[in-house]
Image (cartoon, rainbow, N blue to C red):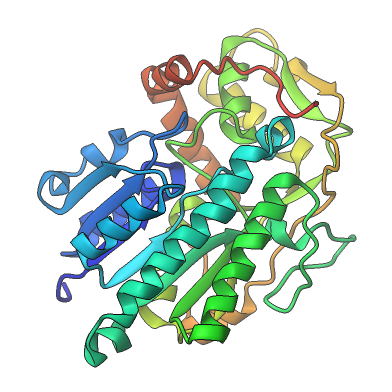
Length: 354
């Protein structure tokens, strides 16, 4: 293994952040400083399964809205790398109350990057040269696509929900700190992630749990909205590749290359469950079409050519492989799901109609 780094990760108690920390603890000697405000979807269970977590992982409850606290903590840790994953991320919740998204995703990003810049400016020339700030974002900032179109790093920003608007704003803040101050940033924009430990308000885990419980499985609109599905472990390998190998100022789009309609995804989940937990009637009989989400983007799809060509990254999991592993995980971890839903007060009800 390479020499140890001190890595400060925001949002490390979340779905993607937790997967990243587990990978780093298992495959590096790095020391991880996990900054998270511990909201409704935060959890450290997966990280705590790693033997080395007790020695090389430290979690602290800290809201990025508190600029003084994040400034003090950065100066205390003295990180070699900051990976910014902390964000409010559910589109439906952003429709119900955009204010949390503006505060966390825009103001929080400003507070973090400004504190990081001041810290970076205090470093000696060698450490300053090696320091990186990696901002993890989404393909939703680009808006919606027409049939057979794809997003790439040159795509125009056109966010259409409060969530995507807040993430677009954070992207622009990060890019401007590079162009204005020379601050050493990297940005990655990913497609729809799925996998173990995802809070069960998102399409795939919600469908799995409702199917198993015998409840109606809701599909927005006519079910033909398309998303590019990326298994979380593939996303993590892309993030790690980028911060280890990218030149500063670069942006990379990371997609799974698995574009599916929502109806195709739900039908596939039902088909796998028919084999794993068969019952009298097929699970697809539980599908119910419901009122569409306001401003629901029709298609997301990523062209990952740049990261494949420049950094040699490519996804390792097909959609069926990743989905099968995900379904098996949720079947075997019903206690975790119940704990998360009980803690958050979320019972699988519909959000995003306000």
